[in-house]
Image: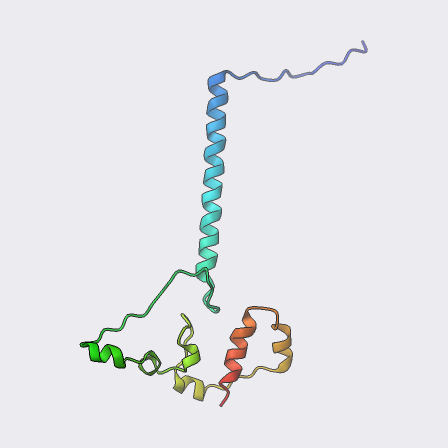
Length: 130
């Protein structure tokens, strides 16, 4: 015959059907966006080894009886930790733990992590070898 034609004709949709499909597409996109946002939030809050700017703000609350105690209050003394660890939110070792723990970190490991955020975590450990 030599004449080419489509075997299946395109289905034609009414205006209402097209509007419905567009709103369903929009809802699906919003749903996927929300799922991705939750994944990001979960990842940001699960990084517990390194203090990150994305983590939610946590704080210790200490109760004292008088204004005089407020002025004399020392968080380093209260938490029995080293002053350089006081701003950490997690894995804040006490002075006793720092003294009793032997940290085995060699120079090769430090060079591997030198460009990574974990470098600071490892470096902090090496400072307290006693």
